[in-house]
Image (cartoon, rainbow, N blue to C red; front, side, top):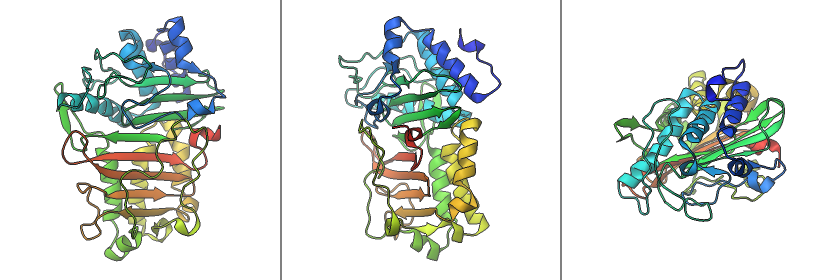
Length: 360
């Protein structure tokens, strides 16, 4: 089977077909490495934002050209065009950091922006599978936990620096959480004659959500005496447990979405869409119906932190924004640059009820 054989009636059928086409490009040893046991809760929760963290599966830089293209096609099947552009942009950003002098950076060539075209760098990992090279589009991994099927239970992981896709499929339903994306630089950048701006739409949508508030509402949404150097609900790092430290009760702060005007609620919906609709329609539609319902908005808060006098300014280190619903959790923080000057984004999209499909 090849990826060209994967036109199907449903998104899920296409995703499963591209996974099988990817497997057909692998050696026996590679296949045994990329497939993990469905019952392995530690594997499900093993992901990180860091460039050299241990990850499951196979590294892009070790794949044949055919296998690498097939792996990228799996990602393209799961994501919308907008989501896939973000994916390509995050990979390209690591090559850009290397080009700008990132310590220990790899030599991977970034994607050229064409749909389905993978980066084709030549970086090689160190022993132990942790990537070795610090910044390179080679240092991203793909893994499957359980055997992909339309009706079965399984999970797709694609991850690397500033990227963690954890998409769990349960009897035909999909839960693309936890989802981490970050990017340095935050602003648009050019490499290999292509321009990228991953997370620009997401960041702009969150800012627009707060710009829609009046001064009194913006003050109500402000998290007094709280500062954030990173996202609150970060990597689970193989904990094999669901997070337990979401704010609860009186600790859930901000302004309640149900109190907003219809125009302001629309801005909240657009911010939610910026994350959820990075995934294919069959994945995102039921989630949007849940997250943006009137019932959900009766228990959904938006909140921000940072320089109160400056307002919501993504060019200021420490600016933090979040959406906290009965299930939905989206947060974005502006950190200082590591390699470049200026701020860069760390973001999280999680589901309090269905991280990992509630399968741990």
